[in-house]
Structures are given as C-alpha cells and as structure tokens.
Length: 189
Image (tube, rainbow, N blue to C red; front, side):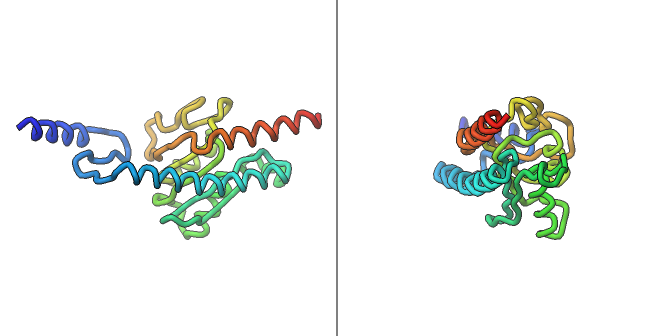
C-alpha cells in the first residue's frame, strides 16, 4: 500500500509539473550508464566546437565555436566571424543556426541540440528560442552577457519555447581558450 501511495504521489507531481521536458519518474528506464554515455557525447561534440573556436582565434576572432547535432549527426557548425564580416550578428550560434536551417530545409530545429563553447548572449538565446532548439549545451559561463543563467535567464521568462540547458561541459577548456585569446590581445595593445 505504501509503494502505491508513493507511485501515485510521484505520478501526480510529474503530471502537475510545468517544467518543460520533464521525465515521468514511473516510466523512465534510464540508468546511470546512459548519463555517462550522454556526458561522453556532450564532450565529443564540445570538442568539435572547441576546434572551431580555435579556428576563430587563429583568424583573429573571439574564440567561440558552435555545433548543431540532429539524430547524433553534426548538421551544422559555426564560429565567430564578426570582425571578418563586419557583422555584429555573426556569432557562432547564429551562423550554426542559419546553416542547420539550410541543411535541414526548415526553420524549426526542434529535434536538434546546440553545443557552444560560451554561454549564449541575449541575441543568440533569442535565436535559439525562435529556432526551437531542443537542448543547449555550453562550456564556459559568460558573466558579462550570458543569457542562460549568468546575467539573465531567458528560460525564466514566459516564452513559448524553453530549451533544456546544460552548462559547464568542458567549461574550463572553453574559458582558458578565451583567457589566452584576450591576454594575447591585451599584449598587442
């Protein structure tokens, strides 16, 4: 009888929850090894994004890289190109979103995940919401303009879409790349 009450309570809590993408605790069969596998996948895709960020740095751009994954396959990539393109909107995330829309032939990226080395800014977070990306996985927090928890949290607003957010994946590596870039830039000045 006690087990039935617990299960009933869990079901009611899950059903009453208004959190997006909540898992039903009664039917979820995931085990911890899946979590470990997911972390390895996160690190794999984030390493691709870090490679793109290094490319951006080599080209004199702020080192931020982004990867969009659909069904386990990379469908789009991007890295900062603001200086080269003289375009304030040429952030890694925006470039990757545009590329993914073109590759998939649609603007809704509901079954796609975005991996980016730096927490998205308000502009990019808005594009993420508008593109309906399912998940955002980022490396380093951005204490100056992060819009997924650091300065503001777009998911806290009553918007029509709220992606799942995972922060800190290879965060130290991402932050170190940014520190090195800005240290070199300061030495030139």
